[in-house]
Length: 328
Ligand code: IYR
Image 1 (cartoon, rainbow, N blue to C red):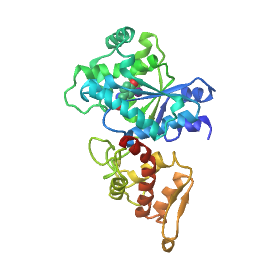
Image 2 (cartoon, helix red, strand yellow):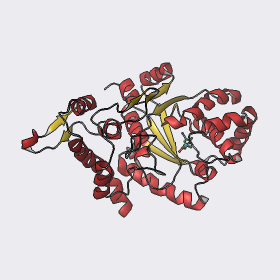
Image 3 (cartoon, helix red, strand yellow):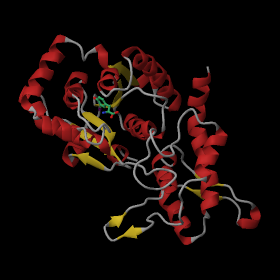
Image 4 (tube, helix red, strand yellow):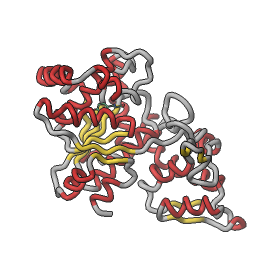
């Protein structure tokens, strides 16, 4: 796989394609980052962008993980001391998950976001941005009904992180896209380059195939799950024998989360995926590419129950190192 393919595979969008091509052609010195609000333990949402960071490392990027403690504080995730503690635990889990330690820089937001220069630049961006625009940028990041001033400051700090970390590429889930668009618009006002960004798709809730999988509601997979819990969650997952279930007039309102997890979590991390089956049901199936597995599920060659059995096995393999790390 060439650098461009590694960078863009499984991305929902890149902004812009031309800028990504230039980065792909750049042989060295390129840097990418993702920021995470430290809260709870690593879950499947964090793992999706971490997979992209692993792709980017293979494509020659140096990677920064921002443990965004100040952002978590602004987003009402608890006391600053507790958030700090969670950030330390998260770092170890990312390494256990497979980020190349020699090529990953972990940075705490509070290491630079409280500096004088940063604060003055932040105030300059505040002058450039309407409250309505900041609020729109946060629509898919916060759930609270009443907007606090802290939530208006938050996206401007996220924009400012990009030049302060000196990165060429900002990575995040699709829910981050409006913050990155805001960054493109406002950073030139303080003589900074508009940043390039890449967004990963949102995965539907495992139980229903609707909405988005998150740790706060519905069924998700986290580093704390035991093998048995993973099996239970995957066995209960919504998995019709098609990738495109329940099309309605307005479009498709349900996804097949089992297939999505195969596509975005399993295939990027394993060369071959084996679905074990007893001889009497046709024996094991082996897949080198996601599309073949999807086609077999649609044709009926692969039964959803067998697909789920394999999914639980591979998820367990991905999670086991982090689970062991947490137990230490
Ligand atoms: N908004 C992210 C956290 C975050 C991301 C980046 I990229 C930053 O520079 C700072 C914070 C979230 O929703 O988790």
